[in-house]
Length: 330
Image (tube, rainbow, N blue to C red; front, side, top):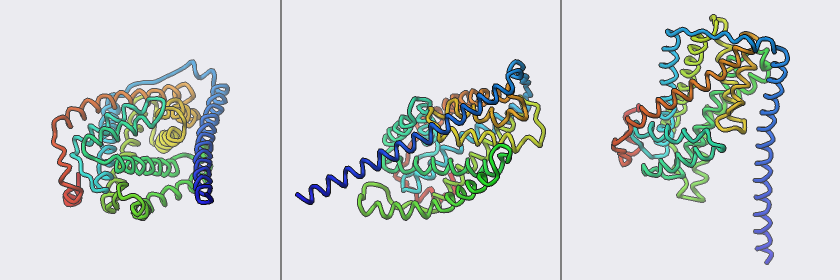
């Protein structure tokens, strides 16, 4: 009986801790949303006259550059995830990996981000990839993308938007997380495998680093695409580049923390707030909405291309990660 009481007490404590973490996470998310709303309302009050005058132009040459850069970034994301999966000993053909990743991403605009996660796990399972491996790879992917976004903010966001101390402390912490990730993941996987052999195998460090690098490259290339898009529609000069990159990735960070699907509303609000002092609230808000529409439209086009690329291709799961590591590439 005492043993049973101890077990029940331990289970209750775990449930309480889990509930507390959920409450804390929701609280942080709502604080981000509330803070964003306050900033937007204040800016709207200060620049209400400017909202009447949206002045966006179109430069086709820069628009072409934006298409190329954004499409390249969309390609690098699933290829980075593919390397993370390979790090856990599961190989999937590049075309099928891109198709799978893109199909799952269509669910990210639904009310909960878990739908996109569940979709990718289900699609990956059809390719022979264990759900535990897919779950682990998604967790690593999300963490790595968040860290890269924070690093980008630390480098490019002006001190007038975010205090310098906050920028550099968070940036250094994110860099530390990126460098420590391969080592931490190997240690964590080793410990967990002692309790549950079905979970995941020890990840291969080289392939983990490759995946982290590809995801970082996608962040950098997307930044180039955002600058090109801004040059296509706004009156931009070279001194505006850091502000545009910083604003776009401050919006990404806020969107990843926020509670809305795919950061809808949160990202646009943060970007508009950051750009308003330079371009005016009207143009900043219009550009923020344009960025969302632009990304969504290109995602649909890219999804069609990915579906065609991955259709009917053999998975070759049996090749294993050794062959991928031997190739050293994609």
